[in-house]
Image (cartoon, rainbow, N blue to C red; front, side, top):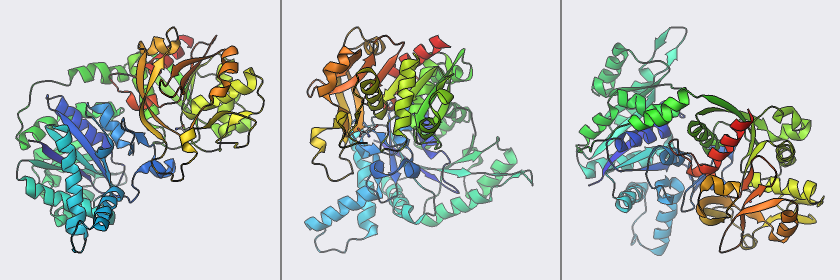
Length: 533
Ligand code: GLN
């Protein structure tokens, strides 16, 4: 029988509920249990695929091609859960199903209402994940903050769900903020009291409180929180700031959070432990032996979350190489204005992530050119591969008028062009080439050296492709087509001859990287960067 943990947040957003949920998943796995995780997002968009990175940060792509919330990335990085489209439930998706049913006449003359129709649909979607995965525990994270109007139907659904499942089968964990007020030199419990008060008004008494704080909490503060929030003092768990998110499960384990959860849910744990994670991941992050500086050239570098999985994958590759990867975030528009030399002269490697739209594109092309000409390790991801192809066409193949037709629809030499099936596409939502596709690797390439495999599967999210008409001329001038999609002959990976390490891939390897198993391309990229410094 599957048990359920509901994770809610209070006081403010950005408390790290995603990391907390993923860490609890990790703790349960470390006790030999199987888990799966769901993110409920209260916004009305069907998925974040159409949202700007300014609004939503990175769009995470699942194996089955969903454009999803970035918290799903944390779930996959911390646990072994199989995360698919069904693991991201949004208000948009819920209303979409309910309205379709209403139009079909499924509700047989009834007035369709938030309670019970919307709440029933939420519960149904949560139970479906449990049914499809047959795990011991499903962890359900509710986005937003308690008190938001739009998250109310989700909280009401949880209230009903807990009643239906019965005592001991569900758990409510509330993540809250315990701020430190500098002028008074005191930590304050009032916001937590109010937040738990809101939860209780809705009919949910939290079982465990995870208190985000700058410094560890004193016994007196924990006692106060326990008394006012109606929880046991041992169930007030502190979540103090740490240098690496990968230490969070260790900090939770030190407070026996895993055991508490298992006991409350009356689950028999099978013995396992966190030792490997501590040694293999956390220790290596805190005690690196080498350092490398990698420039990430993009247009959203001022945002914390826009390239989340890329930054994490670089950390993972550092772990694997016993090195600290210092990330230098470079705005491609600045390169466009002042030249690449100014920003990339001293770095050990250059990475250009995926992206859309014209802004800063010439800066990215200049960055790819700079890495190519100066023998600096280069990893181009999706758009990063496309700009490397444009530079190579213009500057190595004599195709001065080469460009991607995304930026220049009438260009003479569209070396990157819209995929055939995309020409008919009118709707923007969920219509790109999405999810995992097969790729065949050519032996004797750097790519093969990295993967040590002839067939791979990687996740995609794009509309444009390498234009095969230009394959011949590029090959003649030193481009290697190291990875090809077998069915459609699409170029998925390019490399350059006579370069220390220059790879561009049309897919997003960052989505499959884990702290204890770095992605082969990132691992090879950082390894080559370390040889330079
Ligand atoms: N804009 C490019 C395309 O659609 C690249 C997309 C990406 O980098 N994810 O093909």
